[in-house]
Image (cartoon, rainbow, N blue to C red; front, top):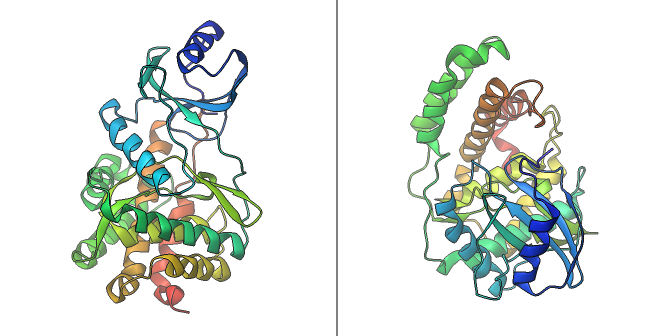
Length: 318
């Protein structure tokens, strides 16, 4: 469940009057996601998403995210803009939280995408990177290699409660990535979290790319690696789908060809992606009460991906 903050109906109705979208008809919380509180809002003037930004999203970062969405939408990418009220304001305060009223996009998130859908997603990611070539604002990546080291230190040996030898495995992988992490690849703003639940589709067509709240300035090809690790495996990380992985990278290449250096670095970047999500999930696993409304995600699902990438670097060229 991902509704942390309750919005009274009276406050919701008052908010809509500032946007001139007609009277409130209904609204309900959206269970998907874990970072923010989201509501599907029905007004006389249409459907909208109200997002209340919880503690993991800094209010000071919101102008960056909103500028990013406007930039991509202006270039025809299927991303939802945050709407401006009658006074031209995008960022509101609702129930004591920073909030935005966001365009509603048609489409559904897939649990078991096909290769054709993975190819379309890869192409959409490539188009996004192409469109961001002239995007000027920057945002540091707090979850890059230095952040992984810090998170591993904070987790310590407590992760061995999740699985024996977990902390030693993390330390081993950090040492590998310290020695092999590429430093001279093209950089841009990236999505950094393009899991299947952050892509909306109708059939084989991408109708929405959403939840840009991890977007940051980073090695561009790392976005390909993150998306590959999110799409090409079963949810528990035990099974790799080569057809999905190949289609995803192939779709990306049609829209934004990888350089030789980027292609060569994908196996290492993918190991970094797997470690990033292993660590954040491990931290949440250790620090989220078992009876919390948020479902804890298994960190071992990405540790298995890490093992796969370490054993099969050829998966990007096969």
